[in-house]
Image (tube, rainbow, N blue to C red; front, top):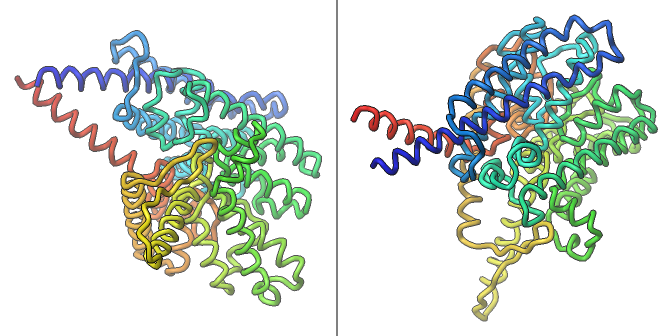
Length: 498
């Protein structure tokens, strides 16, 4: 028992040291929007909210790092990684909400919602008019989504911890280890991510978007986040070139890092073996062909406008971005369209991308298993088959353990979804509205039909907030971390009584 008690104590110290390290440096992230005071000096009085938040984050980080009573990082197991991930996300959301509170832009519940929507790359907002809040807060919202899209595991591995953090990488739901060295993998992912963001900025600028808007939309499109600097989102620009570039960026964000790395290496033969891209792009294309003819005469006058608007909304939904070029509150006259968008938001993007949802990899594996099960059933000869699926440059074989993990995930996913929908129904919202809005929240999308807003009851705000948080961390990590904490605390308490 004493040996196990020492293991638990060591685990808590490792957790404290790593969380402390993160939030010591998190203060730098909080100060990043102040760089834009160079361009908007009239907003300097809003800097105090970020400075105060940064100081609190730094002091918090130093305090718990000292409390860990260790001098350097240790190897992080998946057990410790799950707890680190949980605390990192909770405190990141808390400190990120403080500037909104300190500057009286939002109250505490609204600010936590906004920060959660940012870090989970959802895009639902409590701000009714984004043109009336300071620009440094718009930059802060975009920054949260950009970093949240990459995830704390990649940030910490690439910049702070290094190869000792393999357990942290796995705990955040990452499976693409594109190089044997986990730190090098994380650095390459960040290089790819930042390169695309720079490309997106210039592409949107050239397409006709003002530089400030191009900067923010490039970050949030690539993060499949959906925060916009305009109340009417991308639709307010009414520019076909901007929409085309945005669709391209949304697809880039919804593509897994392993797929990107394979493409960067020019390994086209292996790239074509990956089922996720085929499934994502074909689903978006087929759903657009299915939906847009039915919008003509109902929502739009011409086939050209119907195709343009439908394609953008379809891509935004399945990639989990949340940008829009249409007023979805008017789509209530078109229930089939809202239903399709609701389902697409659930399907989501690829594994190890910035998108949420069930993920294309799981759907592809499930579809392949069903297909071969039927084939083997009707085949007169008994065949021992190994079902292979490609993930980036590596091939994997479907086994009972993989299927069990998928079924557990699907089970928790749908239980959580139906509970969230039921709570919204209890507040008097319609079934279709509740299903759409909570799907948008839990899958990290951000499309809205007008249900989400600052006047929502507290119960609705916190239900949506929790839904966004659970969906981003994919449920199991949170449950595992909570169970780990409870079990370890019991051991510590029982050990202290002896």
